[in-house]
Length: 150
Image (cartoon, rainbow, N blue to C red; front, side, top):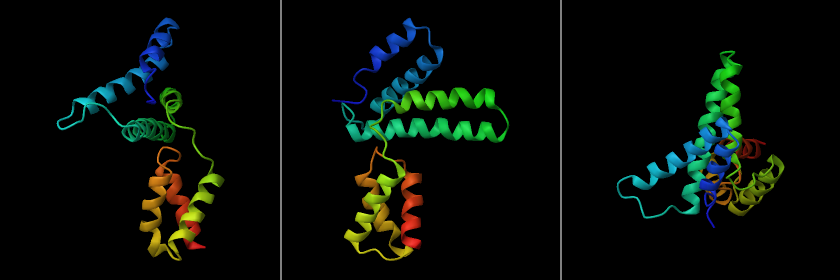
């Protein structure tokens, strides 16, 4: 079952509730999905991995925009971006906590026999595959650096 199966129903509910913020976020998802499907060489449907990557990209864009707005003391612009990020994140699988990500990374380091920061590429590759959709790349990278540096 796809993460986006009930997207149309969510859009209808947001329209009925006159929730403009949710409607904007949901329409952004639908637009991104339609763009992805219409690209040259695209397959008929999207895999779950492609959907997760697309949703993560949308969430990251909004969080990055919100961070920029916060730095510029524009809370009026940052808050809607953060709210949209939360709405889009509802379609993603449950995110792991930093402790859970740390445990997975520790097992990968042990499995690969990684001992220094030079092994970061190997660890990141395997961690990114195992944690796809369950943790963002920045969190994974930070934890891998911590574990390999100590």
